[in-house]
Amino acid sequence: MQLGHWISADEEKRKLRVEVATLRHALKAQQEARAKLKREVEDLEREKKEDKKRIKELEDRCRELEQQRDRYRDTIFKPNVRAKKGDKENEGIEEIYDVFTPKRKRGGQKGHPGRGRKTPERVDEVRRIYLETCPDCSSQIERSKNIEKHTVEDIPPIEVYRAQVIRYERELQWCKKCKRRVKAKISEVIPKSRFGINVLLYVFIHKYIARSSWDTIVWSLANWYGIQVSKGSLVGMLHRSQKWLGNRYEQILEQIRASPVKHADETGWRVDGINHWLWGFFTKEHAYYTIKESRGKGVPEKILTGSHHDDVLVRDDYAAYKKLPLNHQSCWAHLLRNSSEAAKAPDASTEVRLLHRELKKMYASLKEIIAQPFDAIERQAAYQRLSKELKGMAEAKYFHQDAMKIQTRIANQGINLLTTLLYNNVPLTNNLAERGIRPMVVIRKISGGNRSQEGAKTHSVNMSILQTIRFQQQPIISTLKNYLSSSTLQN
Image (tube, rainbow, N blue to C red):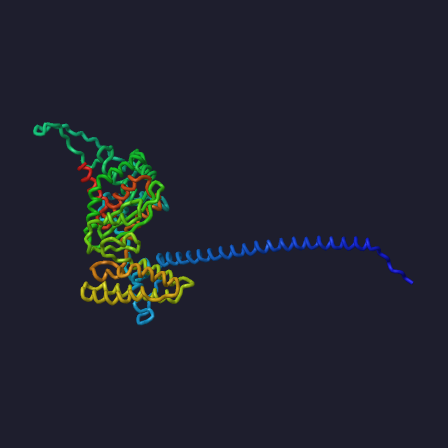
C-alpha cells in the first residue's frame, strides 16, 4: 500500500504565494512589453502618416517639375506636329502651330544654295609667298606665274594695337567783346578725364553688350592697349555717361508715352542686396528701363502719365496695370501657357482639356482676323461674337479645380483679351516686352544686380539707349559715339 505525500497548509500557502508572485511578475512583464509594443505601433503610425505626407509633397513637387520641364522643353524643342486639315477635333489649331511650332528643320535646307563667308571686297595688303626648295626632296625649284588666292581677316598685332596718346595744346584767347578769356572745346574727349571717347565706347560695349566683368575689362585695356585704369575709374565713366545721356533717356520716355501701342513688363532686381523691381516699357522702336523698390501700380502710373486715353497697353495679367487709364490688351501667350500646363497635367480633368481647346480655337480665330486689313465693321462684328463666347467661358459651371483656375484667369482679363479687334496693329501677345527685358535678365544672372542706387540709375539709362539703338536697327558703335560726342561737347 502506497501512502500519499502530505503537505501542510502553511507550505501550500507559501507555494501559492510564490506562484502568484511569479504570475504577477510575468503579467507585469507582459504589460510592459505590451505598452512598449503599443508605443512602437504609435511611432510607426506617426511615421507612416509623416511618410504619406512627405510622399504627397514629393509627388506634387515631381508633378510641378515635370510640368516645368515640359514647358521648357516645348519652348526650346517644339515638336514639329501639325493638325490635319479637315479634322473637326483640331479645327482652328493649325494657325496656333504656325506660332508655337517650327515649320522646318534647323540649319540649311535640302536643295537650297550653300552659304559661306564672303571674300572681303577690300584688301589692305597682298603678300606673295613661294618656295625656293621642294618640301619633299629639297631640290631647287623655279618661280611660277600661276597662283592660288587665299584671303584672311585678322586684327593688328598687340604691338601695333596700342593706345594713341594725344596732347592737345589749347590757345588761351581773349574776346574783346566779352572781355574774358576763352578756349576751344576738345572734341572726342571725356570731360574732366584723361581718356578719349573711344575708351568710353569700349567700356560701354564690353560691359552692356559683351557683358564682361570689370576685372576682364581692366585686364583687356591693360594688355591689349597698354591703358592702366582702375575699376573705380571705369564705373565713374559710366556714371558720367548716364548724366550726359539723360536728355535722350527722357526723349525715349516721351516717345513711348506718345505711341498709340506700348508694351510693359517687370522682373525682379537687386540693389545692394535689397529686393527691387526692373520695369520695362517698349514700343517697336524704343526701350525704357527703370529700377524701383516698388512693384506697385504707382510706378506704371507715373511712367505712362501723359499717354492718350485711346492708347493701348499690351501687358500680362499683373494687377498693377489694371487701373491704368488706357485700353488694355492681355497677353494670350500667358493664358494659353497656363491652360496648356493644366490640360497636360497627369490628373487633368476633361473640363480643363475642353476649355484649353476652346481657348486655342478662339486664339486661332483672332490671329486670322487681325491678319486681314483693318475693317472697322467686320472687326466690330467679330468683337461682339467673340465677346459672347468669352462671357460663356467665364460664366460656365465647372466642377473641377483646374478648370475653375483657368476660368478665373479668363474672368479677370475679360474683354481685354479682345482689344486687338478694335484697334489696328495691336498684337495678341506681349512678346515684344518679353524679348526687350531679356537682355537685362541675362545681365542680372551674371552680376546679380547693382550695388547702389546710382549704379541702378546708370544701368537703366545706358541700357535704354543701347536697346533703343538696337530696336531702330542703327549701327551701334557709330550711333552711340555720335550721342556721346554731342553730349560731352554740351557739358
